[in-house]
Structures are given as structure tokens and as C-alpha cells.
Amino acid sequence: MDPIEKKAIYTKIIKNLSQTFESNENTGPSEIYKVIITELATIPYYDWTGIYLLDYIEQELNLDYYIGLETDHVKIPVGKGVCGSAVAERTDKIVQDVREEANYLACSVGTRSEIVVLIEDGDKIIGQIDIDSNQVGVFDEVDQEYLRIISQMIIEQVNSLDGGLHR
Image (cartoon, rainbow, N blue to C red; front, side, top):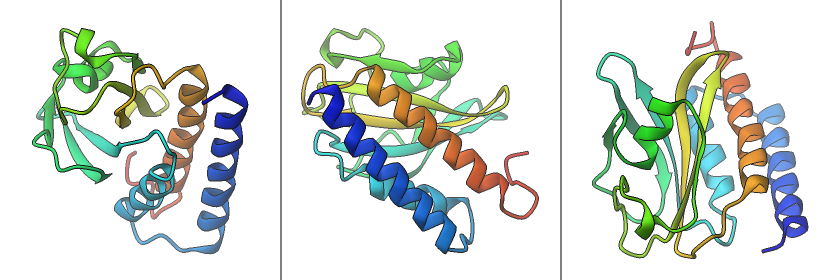
């Protein structure tokens, strides 16, 4: 998919999310995650879409809401796999072909590429958006740019709840 098509899809998703959040009272973070993941999962090349939250005490990522094939990876230690290394290195990750990634944790045998975008509140990592595709090389800087915008929407929505639950 070319960058112009991607931008159009993401722009529509962000508009839909903004309208949803303006018109609804969210009962909690899990509802916010569900709304966002459900909207993101409509993107044609997204085959698995989920949110992991960081447990600072246990130093692991815990799977919250996701859409896609069932996964055994409901807890991922910081530093392990693409998701865990993104947290350890405090950076987003784009993997064009997971078969070439030494530190890859296979969620599905069909997965070929992955993008992980951190959800950060200031300098604190709250979690991440994790997306897998069954196509090689589909993720790029356009995906990362728009997923960063969406990750900030998550923070804004959660922090607008009583007292900002992530503070």
C-alpha cells in the first residue's frame, strides 16, 4: 500500500476515534484500548493488533485487548522479543521480516512483519501498540507516525479519566 493510501486510512481512523471519544463517556482504560484496537484492526494489512501494558514491578508486558489469532504471549519479559526489546531500548520497532529477527517471539506461524509503537506518558512507558502482518515489509515510517499519534490519544483519554490512572 502506498503512503498516500496509508495516510488516508489513518486520517479516517483518527477522525473516527476522535468522534467516538467526544461522544462517549469511557468507563475505564480497557474500554479505551478496545475502541482503539477495534478501529485499527480494520486496516487491511493488520493481521494481529493488540495493546500490551508494562508492569514495572514484574518488568514484563501484559497483554490487554487484542484482535487476531490467539497467542501464548500474554506476558513478555522486558528485553525479550521485539516487544520486550522495544521497552528495554525505549524505542519503537519496525521489523520488515520477522524470520530474519534473532530475538523474535513467534505469535503466529503466518506473521511476516511487525511494528511496535510505545505508549508513553512523558518519560514513562505505559505500554505499546503491537501489530503483526502476514505480509513482508508492509510497515514503514507512515505507520509509525500515525500510530504515535494514536498512542498519544490513548494517554489523553486515559488521563482524562478520574485522576489519570497512569499517573
